[in-house]
Length: 182
Image (cartoon, rainbow, N blue to C red; front, side, top):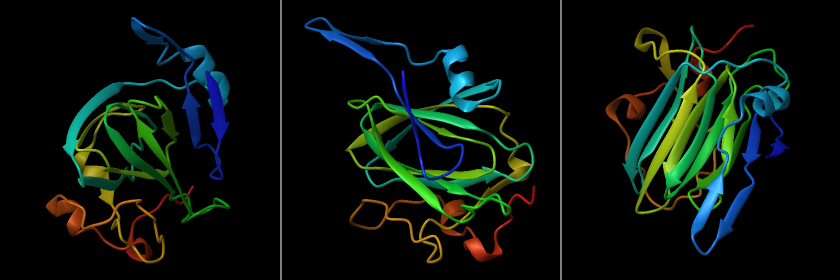
């Protein structure tokens, strides 16, 4: 597996080795030892999630202010533009974002550590999105930030108006959002 660092401390892009021939392909999508070495600590995943969304659906920017979740995400059908936002107030990259296209074709994965917001928008007719999390979903701690926040100024690589849940449409702006103080 090839591990690529990003401008945001802790956010990694994982590119698995793909063995392909006329029969199809094989790849190792997760290896605990390699992952822990890349992250620099022991990571335990406790929950796997799978979503399917149509073109233009934007999910996020989501995070849990308590019981924060690290997320290892990938796409197994279609293509998305995936974004991590640094919400750690004491970080040198606080309020900055990193985005990458994830697709069934490129087979990349993105590691979004605890302390980051996460979002994606579907660029293909539909996409199936898988993610492993380091803590359980805790709705009482879930927070959101507006996808179109002018301070964050995320380039979503999408022309048109995204489809949002009511919760995401009503999310606060970055300036008034709860962030991680540690």
